[in-house]
Amino acid sequence: MSHTPHELSEEFPEYAEKLRELKTSDAHFARLADQYHEVNRRVHRAATNVEPMEQLAEDELRKERAVLKDEIYALLRA
Image 1 (cartoon, rainbow, N blue to C red):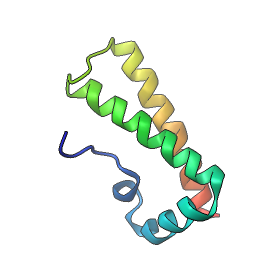
Image 2: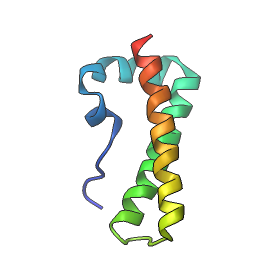
Image 3: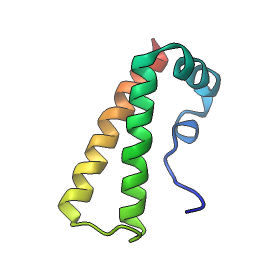
C-alpha cells in the first residue's frame, strides 16, 4: 500500500508541528493518534478491497474514524 488517504498530517496540515509535539508529550493524545491510524488503515484497506468487508462494518469504521478525528481536533485546538 503506497499511500493511505486521511492521515492526520494531511487532515490538519496547519497543526503539523503540534501533532508531532503532542504525540511525544501527551500519552492520551498519542493513544488517540495510534487508534486513528489503525482505524484509518483498516478503512483504506476495506475501501480498496485489499481486505474486503461488509458495507455496514466499513461504515462503522468510518464513524469511529470521524469520532477519533473530532477528539483529536479538539485537543489540537486546546
